[in-house]
Image 1 (cartoon, helix red, strand yellow):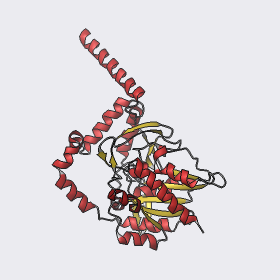
Image 2 (cartoon, rainbow, N blue to C red):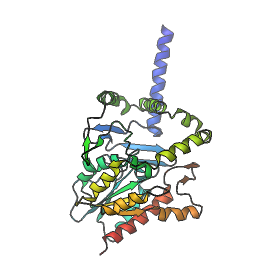
Image 3 (cartoon, rainbow, N blue to C red):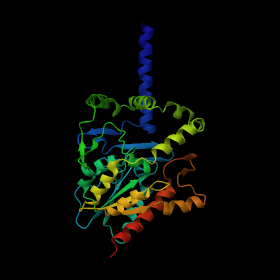
Length: 341
């Protein structure tokens, strides 16, 4: 019995030392998410974060839970606001905020005088339906003058994979947002366990591992780059089938945001192959501006500078630092032309 007690005590002390090490070294962090009754899963305002993947970044969520500087909902007189809405490419965890295209845009647009604030509302995993809900229930509170939606083909499927987000539904050709589909049992478990995941790094790591395994990501993580080689045919075939499906909701979203008189809404293509012509036509039909960033990224590919390649890690994924710089300058020029008489 004495040996068992010593073992348990040693085990607890060891876990405590590991927890302290992870926190001080900032190589892992507690859960960054919480739950909001209006927008579902949300980021924890004021929380510091450390991110490792293709790139590396350290930063802090604004007091309101979006990335970048804290700008309150109320605008100062003379200030114009631009809202960036999209998925993980817009979220841009891979770069420091100072290198994110949000900051590049803000700097370029404020060369003459400080009058523009650019807010990053990007969220990993968001599709067009998620973006629309986030826009209606959260982004609009910050009174943007220009809202930019960044889309690729898969975003138009509107699958809404996160079960802790409100759902976008159709009723008589009209869109409505509902929280009824959020499983209360899952929400109850989330609220019960968040006391641990939001305060203990080790518990958050175990919870993340559990999610990866349940979502079928165990083997991709174990085999890393070899996984795509082993299962290449399945991956290519699956993506090919999914890439061209477009949910009816996407066209209704384009129609709705096109009617918004309080902000100028812009669609930006982020798909390397481009959006379908009928999607672009729908954007124009609904009085939306359309911008294709391939115009700035494709020349880089031709020069041998892959916009998605990270030399420091040898990985290919989200936009690298150079791409953020190019995209920020490119979008700034487009915005200036839109606002010129």
